[in-house]
Amino acid sequence: MSIIAEYGTVFLILACLFGFFMAWGVGANDVANAMGTSVGSGALTVKQAICIAILLEFTGAYLAGGSVTETIRKGIIDPSLPLLAENPNLLVYGMLASLLAAGTWLLVATHYGWPVSTTHSIVGAIVGFAAVGISADTVSWGKVAAIVGSWVVSPLMSGLFAFLIFVSVQKLILDTENPFRNAKRYMPLYMFLVGFMMSMVTLIKGLKHIGLPLDYAESTVLSLIIGLVIMFIGQMALAKIKEDIQADMSFHFSSVEKVFGVMMIFTACSMAFAHGSNDVANAVGPLAAVVSVVISGGEIVGKSSVPPWVLLVGAVGIVAGLATWGYKVMATIGSHITELTPSRGFAAELAAASTVVMASGTGLPISTTHTLVGAVLGVGLARGIGALNLRVISTIFMSWLVTLPAGAILAIIFFHCLKLIFG
Image (cartoon, rainbow, N blue to C red; front, top):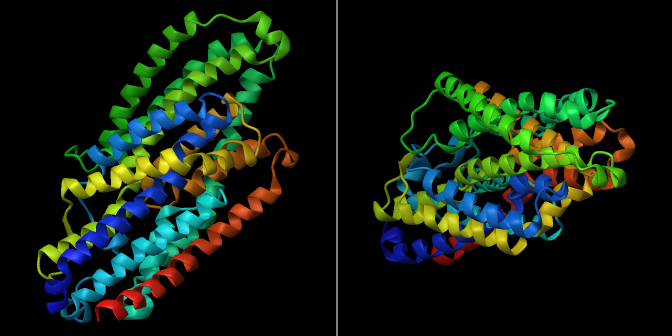
């Protein structure tokens, strides 16, 4: 307890620095979830994507990032253990080490353009310091096993959805005699699906912390209404789009892809908001835990209110990472796995959103990064295995396998360094 009182201010400063570093990593790496397909398909330029993402990621992170969040991330550590209650400084060291470890791993992964899960990075780090620094009994291994299982489930589910959606687009629109006419005929249906799924993602993942206690059924009804409204607006917008014969002579689907391009902007905005609101917790959760322990003088609680300034640190960190290094992972998702067009990017985004919605409804833990990569793979596979860059894909899979142990090993090293410094 005396260590907390003696070094409280130092711990707070370190927590802010390390929390900002971790949030920077979330912005630099995870931004691919929201923007990679839009840029790769040509629907948005890198500058436009960064401007949209800065606005909506910040809005999502700051406004809907969570007034209350799990300070002991994902319930992986049991805060009621006597050892932790007697030595709250161990939790402070652990959370600081976890933030620094996860941020460092994201820095390395982003440097090489690997899209890794920020959630798995921080979870791996927390498991590492808890298992070695405190006791293996403090870790909820069942939750860890569920996360490992999601490595397989997330990409398979979204890949299958993306495959089916893109095949339907091919059958109904692209491979027909008059693609533009059929695009106008069937696009309202896809617009309804996009409106419904994106609303569900926003309501389930983005607005759950801001005083809108909608359950899954209420969110479904509201999303159905929003989907119908978007379908109606979309029909009016489609009526104004005219076929560009000149452009179609150089690329047969030029007019059709313009229609999908408009949809991609909408899906990108929705995913950015939901992503910012959801993944900022990876940085502010451990930061809030340290703030809570220091301010209370050493008392450890499972959940606590997150001060607005903590959310601000996370939101600014995400935007900083996005603006400085976001383009690296964006390039991997958008153009290195397979060639994307607006129609393929649209299928991937819709599949990823659908997977997130289904997983949230069933309680299945998934990674948004893995989900989107799986969806891009599914779209590529619909055109044949030759359309995929297998070397890039194998590198990405390897980085996923390494993320959890890398976070754990780094956290153990940093934990012992902090213990050595502060006692």
